[in-house]
Structure formats: C-alpha cells, structure tokens
Length: 244
Image (cartoon, rainbow, N blue to C red):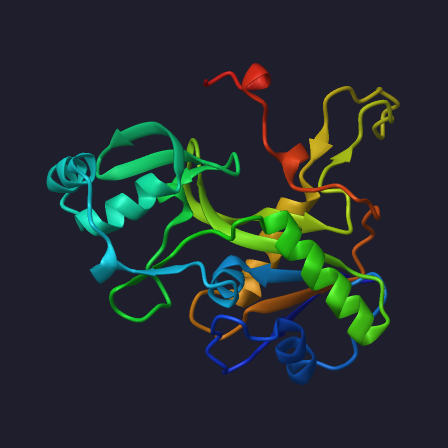
C-alpha cells in the first residue's frame, strides 16, 4: 500500500486550554487504525499556555550582554536562558543550547513565529506526556489505535536548512534497529538504526509547512512498531556523542 501524508487544515487560532481533540475531529473525519498523527509543537505550546509576553520579562545582566553582542532583544535572550540547561555554543548571532528536555537546538526551542507581536513560545513542559495525553484522548474519541508525534523544526550539524524532528513520541517505537538482520547481499547489519519518528515528522512538514494553517498531519499506511517508548531513544547520550 502507498504511504499517504494527509494535511488537516484548521483556521482556528489555538489558545490556552483549547480542546485539540475536538479541533482535530471537527476538521477531519475518517481516522484509521494504524494512523500516525504528527502535531506541530507550536500548537501544543499554545494550547498548554507555554507562551510568554516579552514586555513582562526582566533581562539579567547576562542576557543584556549577549543581546548587545548579538543584536537581539535582551528579553528574548532571557527567555532562552531560562529554558536552557547548558549553552553549547554561541557564534554568528546563533545560540546553540541544550534544553532541560535534553534537546540540542537553536535558542532552546524558543520561537516568535506565528505569534502576535511581542510574544514568544517555549517548548512544551513534557512533550512525551503531551503526545501521550493527546493519543489517549484521540483513541477514546475515535475508537482507533494510533500513534502521536509532536514535531518541531531543528537545524542539523553539517547540513544547511532545517527539518522537522520528533520531540514527543507516544504509541510507536521511534527507532527501527536493523542490527542483526541481513542486507540484500546477506551481510549482517550491525549499526543501522533508522530514526523513523524523525523521518515521519520530516515527511509531515512537506504538507504542514509554516503558513498553511495545518497543525496536524496524518501519515497513513506506515508500518510502525507499537511501543510505550518515549523520545528518549532518539537523544544521543553524552557517552556516545563524539562532539561533546
């Protein structure tokens, strides 16, 4: 069967406390068993109230210093620092940080796009829990067995451009490990592990885009392995990271 990537369009501006399940089911009928629902991080952050009005932020001396050097708003820098567990690198007006979730990304995932002027969005407090809660509620509402991924846009070392990656996982194994299986020439594979959750999020972004009012995407006919795994297997440990 052919893989399908189905955008779910809604013109509703998501606000804190909105019912994402109701918004999804009113925008799309016909969910199927085995569907993977990819949800935009920004939508989840808005629904959970993970927004900050910059006018109320008092920047620290560190934030003021970084902002002056990088020509950025010191209030925005303060929000980034608040969400940062570790500063990985600062160069060329870019802050690469490790978030408290363990993600290595620009600006601790703090973002001003698709928000009213003067607001910034932070990542969800617990993206795995957000994905799990949404999956359970969608399954209860539709009677279908599904998986849910929360996706955010990350840059990549050694590559230009950005791509969507999974920051929250529920209902599927995020990595397909081929170790121990044989390739088409009979050689045993030893280290091949495919980040299927990230690949699904990237595929979803092709129709989600950034300006199309498409907070949800359905990926259909993808043969994933049901699992209670979270996003953790996708985060490389410091021990196996050659660049830390």
